[in-house]
Image 1 (cartoon, one colour):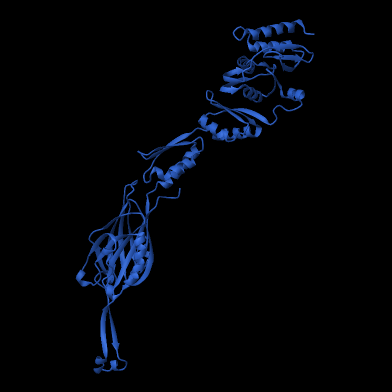
Image 2 (cartoon, helix red, strand yellow; image 1 turned 180 degrees about the vertical axis):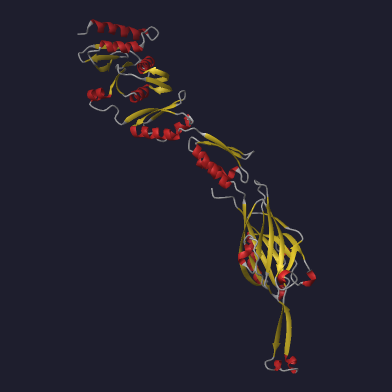
Length: 510
């Protein structure tokens, strides 16, 4: 039997919903009245009305209240700022048309601002965050404690599910949202609260815990640093910079005109990227790889190789010296060869004479730097950078002191090299310690191009060899032996050639 109080409330509730929101009592009042009416008789069922929209609430003793309403399953938005939990449910009830029965122990303050949210998601989110269970039957939502839910339903409320509100103090909120979305499950939900700078997460317990850890790790104050490139271009490091940014949080701004890079990220990430850029933004290094060869010229080519007919960019370098007092060459011939022409030339030199490789060369230079190095055919170990040491000279070959200037603006594509030589011919001629010293009038200038060889040839050392041919025994006779032998003097000339292949390094590997 329904008591008078319940009959009155039933009439009041039906009137309120029929009259419409403009004339109805507050939805929160309806909830409180329902609780009052059923304070001694727990509401245990809620079933749809047989006709029209609404529900029928029944308690354990059979008392019933009919609640006609049309429910909204999507909310355009909610905006709670320190709102008491029961008041928040009251507002949700007003917007959706749901009858929400909240127990007295529903305490706490809600700060949450969301747009276009499903009603079911919002209720589940609040229930998990504030430690309640809910049971929706038709258009009535019954909130209860977790133990009560397990007692009534015989199971845990949404077992394995959890929720959290995560405040984001420093990181970009939308970037953080992108990060945490990678950790959510297929059924998980991430809600972004731009107004309060927080993320609401509804997912499995494991996913929620992983997202909490990520936000804690990455929600630190970002810092910015601008780096001015000096020796390299943005294109040289852009991929390396972008790959080192923390995905979804960091960003890099590239100014091609000013050749600057501005990094915004977590302090440790910014420091790592700055260190990377500095390791790349070094003076560009030019490596000269090559070799020195010696050709014992045959009689047909006793005057050496005709370099002017072979190389491109031909230059002749004349040396100062006492030319009349030496048969050796006082000039050098310079030119360039392509890789293909270089390979052909090496094979063709066999027709000029006997070819012998003397030593490999590897010389390192930096753009904008001057240096001196030695090429000494008698001391291969001195062909590295000069350390100011004296070298023991012998009677063979030459020593070439080389002053090298590598030029080019730090970011320029075109790099040039300038060589100035001082030549020592060995063999007891005019000069210090039996060596004749000659110095070039002017430097050799050349541009660095890919797959090009520098050729320094025409370094001729002229000698003569006496050879005697005779008739055995008779040629050894005194006086008369001259008729049976012939002395012949022939040239035994040697040409030294230096090949260098320049290679412009782009710095350490990216």
